[in-house]
Length: 251
Image (tube, rainbow, N blue to C red; front, side):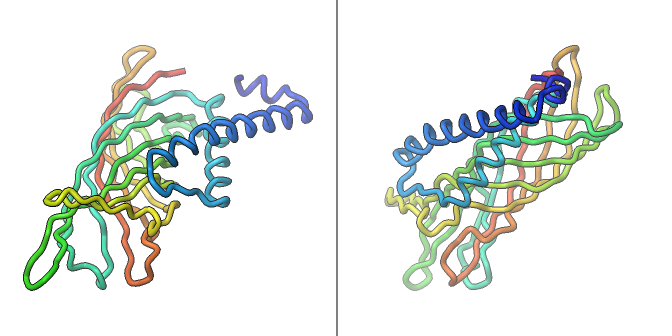
């Protein structure tokens, strides 16, 4: 459905289309919810987070009809946890993870675009956990999430050119655990993890149009502003740098 046909719809037809879209989102969410429970132990989604996810999915679907381009993203990120001073003795290090997703962009005005992504990411941190007297054991925090980054994008021109973008991100944590490679122990942490995190992105990229298609490469800096650790003894946030590449289809 293009934007012209939407404008020509009656008010009653528009409401019916919106209701049908919401029902489809609820159906997809029910299909996803049970596999997630089976895959990630103790996965529960609060009613507020579930409603927010439905709203974001609805916005994502509604923007497809107005999009000028569709992006296919894949890449790697290097992430670490930012511990508060109370628990900063963990000697954290960077951990690499996988990222992939889709994106839709629409023109706002000359050189400016609005872009929304649906992104799956694997993040975490490597740490040294102290125990006993002057002893430590290596640990790896791992988390996975589905997120919705929103961008205001500035591109120099329509031909091959660099671009920059920034904007907020809504993150829904799917899993969180601590692995101890030396012993093979695995500790699920999702019960102590907030399911929703507010984040921010800043990116630089380059785009190469090739007819109806195009290629791109970009570097993203991501910062989780929200504390995703429920325990009041300290705070844990996250930051990462991702390198993403992919293709663009121009509509």
